[in-house]
Image 1 (cartoon, one colour):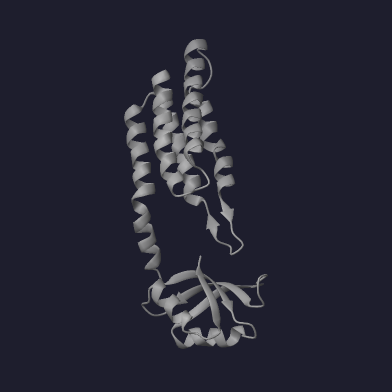
Image 2 (cartoon, rainbow, N blue to C red):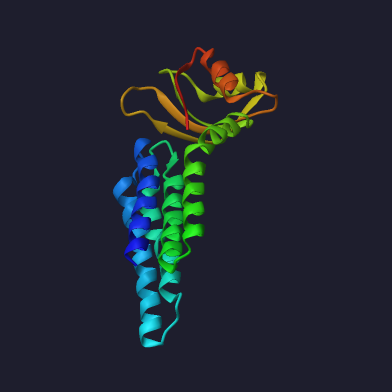
Length: 212
């Protein structure tokens, strides 16, 4: 049992360090606690079932799988630009709890392979994820137009260059008098995200652009 707890701490630490290096909401301590706590719960459930010969050997584990959602929900935030942050962290916490449960029941092979696989997904596949997103013909943008500029000429500019905007949300910038818009920019031509952003920067009415 002590070996299982130590293994859960080690794997949780490995995952937590990776998240901590990227300055994510859940870091070293959070991942260790999730992985180790799941392991302890599984050990406790196994002990109760073996010692008292009663109960369900996986009932407490089932509660962990569903209950870990409160941590995931707490790590997901929506910025003022409607940008969602923390989905990967929430999924990582849920996966870390699964690793802890596997260690708690004694499935070391599954836990180690699973833990390392999670690390590879978080660490190495990030570049692929970014590359795939930049190759899509849709991008979420936050754009500020200069004071006195109207949205209609800006939309006409997009149309003239094979682009169009969807889900437009208007808001007033509290720092300056510029008008801010959040929208999804889509392309009818084969253009990358960088090319679409470069095109928008040529518009004289645009004062600030940020990809969400």
